Length: 107
Image 1 (tube, rainbow, N blue to C red):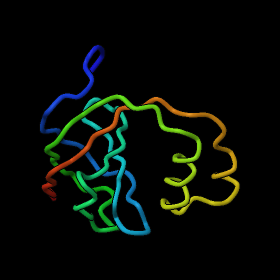
Image 2 (cartoon, rainbow, N blue to C red; image 1 turned 180 degrees about the vertical axis):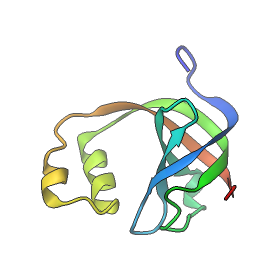
Image 3 (spheres, rainbow, N blue to C red; image 1 turned 90 degrees about the vertical axis):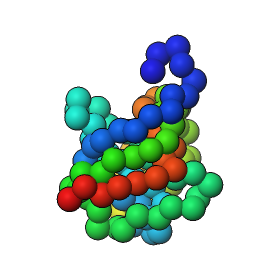
């Protein structure tokens, strides 16, 4: 991904965490062990809140993103984290991200 702004691809991994409010985002662990945050194109896809541990294939765009403290805290709240865990977030995070336009659950 270095040197590229967005890359169109299909990618496989295991869902780690899902938004517990609406299922509007998830994190996943890739085959190489990297973790990635996934959002869905135009806010049109919602996944089951109990999708954690399932293998999925995504179609969309991968990119590197710097997520603000405010957004990280929002994600932590949506993910069901405690107030102490949310308050412990004090700096932005650069991470691999993915905007999915399609999701297939493999198992």
